[in-house]
Image 1 (tube, rainbow, N blue to C red):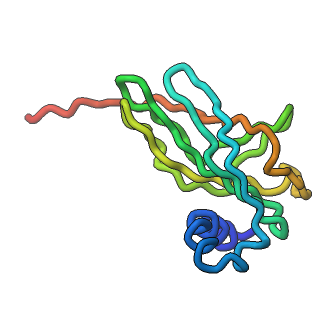
Image 2: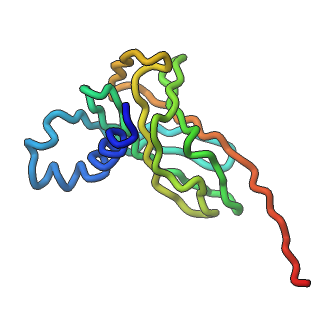
Image 3: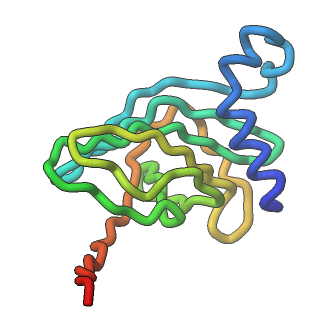
Length: 147
């Protein structure tokens, strides 16, 4: 799967509503669900707002709402997002997320999973219960004083 194909799938997922309203036949091949699965972390939560399945590419695209109820920002590694389905973990093949959830705010992010880790078809249904894995990072804060 090339990066260009994956970027195209992200774009198609992002524009799904608009295209579905204006050209319903253009989205007939895309399976869509709005499961609302929530993954709770100590100081933030992730909600799977929408899932899109592109069968020929064996790819799922997730639209996430990342909510931070805390007083400090949450910094994470978007390229390491993953979805857990049962005992299986599927790592992101492409992401579009900022890596930061501001304090007392929410952010939107997208990521896709494609096939299995060994390159086979995963054939994952959009009807699964998804837990989202968000690897956090601690940011080094350096104070720079004027000389």
